[in-house]
Length: 244
Length: 226
Image (cartoon, one colour):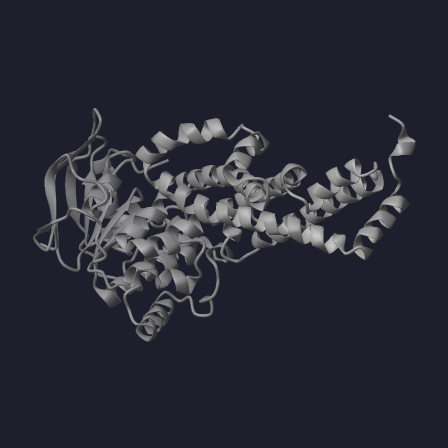
């Protein structure tokens, strides 16, 4: 297992947020974690990222316990994680401080191209749309060549059209780079579109209710019978009737 | 008040001309700017690292902040006797007063600016394992710079206010000295007003120069969108 959660529990003061979470993530897998808001899914991701220590249990990556953030696994926040005082180039090269200048320049150019920001190298984040900022952040994360990416509702602040585009972008990049991805979202459709497996969490305190294999090949047809079946299964699992 | 005693613009204009002819205009302006520059620069050099450190260490802040808050409402002019006691009558005293006047607001503003840094940016810096030096230079400083520039502008305004007052007591050149001297040496109220006008104009110019910093590309994100 690339990432292994073993009996992870977490509390903030008297409030229990996670209870006995055990799950393994395989190398190169795309795992989505969905659940109602406040179920502790972001907390779980922060524990895996080394930003929080669990109250009980452990997380290991490649068998090593996680104790602190590490540049081999990068956390992607919503697009506000980009540094507004750096240009697109500056942001993407941020983690490459120990690289020789020329290699660094090449790496930055490579990732600018990968996320389709050619021509915006010298632009500042305030000149970019939300989707473009999110691309910058993804490129900044990928540029340091991490083995694991943690994405915490990365497209939550985007409009629905951009969100859809960003999902196929992310899948394209994931296929090209083969990183292990842990993706937290409250959007059930998003999880079924992206993931190899979806972890469905209960309301607080968060426990794993069910792990759903998404056995549909990419590119996924969003109106196929299987897609709708799996989506409705997760809706049901969270306790939502899928109607308005 | 007898309005006839206040010199009109023409008389004041002539007084400024007289200062220029006697070579005092440039001399006094330079003398005042010299004191402000040194006092203000010393304050910047000390207050910014000090404020950064306090902002990052909550324990240090808990210890020092109350002292800063008590010192802040004390006018720098109240320090004049102590300044003279420590540094004697002269430039150093005046520079010290300017230093004090700008040091306190700069320290407090830097500290507060550190508190306002988006935690996401600090987390990202941690995640990429950036060494401490780069974390300060590439994250902390640029993150606080927009607020810092505003504080620097305000502090420079205060420094300029204080140089004039400091020169009224401790030195024999500068625009503050000009005002006191003009009154003492024969009620030259045209020169008094000339001094006031020069102080006002230079204050505005300094503020305009500082405002230009707010247009730098790397800080514009910190201000309301244009």
